[in-house]
Length: 486
Ligand SMILES: Cc1cc2nc3c(=O)[nH]c(=O)nc-3n(C[C@H](O)[C@H](O)[C@H](O)COP(=O)(O)OP(=O)(O)OC[C@H]3O[C@@H](n4cnc5c(N)ncnc54)[C@H](O)[C@@H]3O)c2cc1C
Ligand SMILES: NC(=O)c1ccc[n+]([C@@H]2O[C@H](COP(=O)([O-])OP(=O)(O)OC[C@H]3O[C@@H](n4cnc5c(N)ncnc54)[C@H](O)[C@@H]3O)[C@@H](O)[C@H]2O)c1
Image (cartoon, rainbow, N blue to C red; front, side):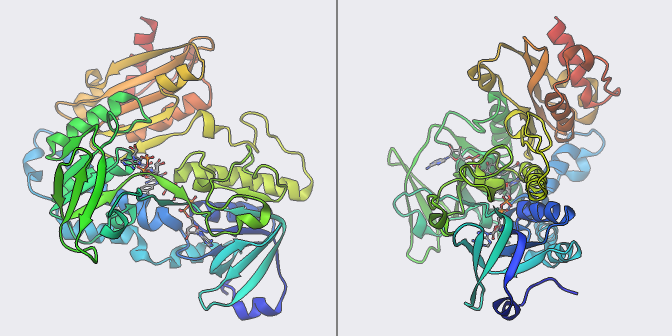
């Protein structure tokens, strides 16, 4: 039996649910899952593909493009193996692998999951139409209304921003969508931006055969992380053949009308760079411009400010979960918020008490204190919690403890000539870890140990008893503790 709702049925019946979720990306799906698990009747409204940006144009395809790149780089650092992996990537096979991980841009698998948990799917654009009400515009143009008895959750995510520069919009530029789904390798690719999308996509396309130029207007890459992360990644990108230019702003973009053929990027000082494609990796905007925010007294196009239960401030029925609330724009963090919001919606619906204390079951505390992020470049960068600069700015009395990851036995075994660095930021008053950053090959899987330490506020004296296995890269923990002890 399918739960996909026939709009004709809905027009006849009053479509009323306990919870209506607008936007069925990873976050909306998980709000729906938690609401259903609590026994609430639930519908999602989705106007594109169930699974959202992450499944089709972000996390999954980008990581599928990057995995062969980092695996090859790792193999090239292992004596006895490196000569077997000297050749180029098999681009056709990489694309096929990427297409598989993007489910060939079909959402049947996600639909089956929602159906299996009893969530109704409404295909179409959802717009708020006053408190507790969502107007749906089906692809056929038919319009109908859904009413939510307890909550509406806006999970409409974000879209890429193309800066308002002369010629940019008309130049048919790549955004994260094209950078993750293109089936053609441009000969020359200019990447504008120095954030996560920029460094991951520069890494992938350089390895796939493009000549990549990264234009960063700031001082370095990955400005939100510890400075050494961007420095090591810039060094590696340069060694891979890419050009990384910092302190460089784009003034205009020129391309023949219709947006085909070579593209010319005009820099602030007048210099012109020619390329085959230009990727704007310049951040995100909330998908809230056309969701009826004005009908409930909110400003269209704004990020939605929420409390710790992800309820929009000033409402008792409206929640905003995932990218759209701008707390931490990552899938795992949005899904965490979905678990918290789903539990809060259920508790409120049943009149049960909420635990909104710090680290309580109904408080998305980790959004402030322990957001983990892995940048899947070569080398990888993995960080959780506060950087030194953020901790100092927040008024903590802290000490940064640094260690050269190359000096860990496990690192040397992992890769010949290992290059990497680790930093632990210690709260000197509480003797706990406020943040940790690791940069180097193979550090992605190290990160959760740090997340447990930060979210668990594990005292440093107890961390000495968390013994890392020998000889793994995780022994960097022991070295950091020894360095801290002095
Ligand atoms: C290139 C790239 C790589 C990334 N890699 C990672 C990664 O490795 N790890 C990670 O954790 N995060 C990653 N992210 C971030 C991640 O993709 C987002 O944080 C995540 O997709 C947010 O999920 P969401 O459900 O909030 O929004 P989205 O995934 O954007 O989903 C929102 C959904 O709402 C639908 N929608 C919008 N408006 C309406 C409407 N009015 N009516 C009906 N439906 C609507 C959309 O069609 C969409 O399906 C990456 C992002 C990019 C751009
Ligand atoms: N592995 C991951 O977890 C992962 C991967 C990709 C994206 N994401 C998430 O997706 C979100 C979007 O990533 P992003 O890289 O697009 O955004 P970002 O905010 O991380 O970086 C945007 C970059 O563009 C620059 N920029 C902004 N406007 C500009 C302009 N007009 N001209 C030149 N440069 C400009 C900024 O200075 C910054 O360097 C991030 O929040 C990120 O966390 C996560």
